[in-house]
Image 1: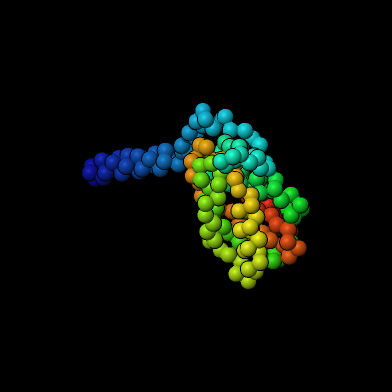
Image 2: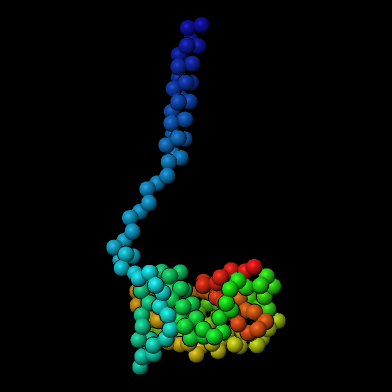
Length: 171
């Protein structure tokens, strides 16, 4: 049985190498360093409108569509503070709509595209579109140029709403 000893050696060596490869593959890759420009963004979102002659006099520091979504939601909240539902929304809402909003480089709304329109409540669709159009110009997406962002509108039967981006949740 002199041949079984070398086989055993190579089998153990192969199993050890496989186990080592599996263990090294399980290590977490290091987090990439944040770019220097990301540290320049302020922690507070843009609130409220300031209209300029050809668009918004405010600019959004957002470097991503997701970050711009917060600027857009804060802008709408600033204009319609009396329409914001305070606290957690009830479990059953009157309407829920998902809408894409296209903003040009100076903050003007150029297009609205419903991804999920609350067809059972056409008055809500019209009111949301009116609110967005009247909120134009939005903060200018200076770092992004033109931007299309998506937000979900949570509509209470009282006519008050929350945006998913800034919602306080549901009970």
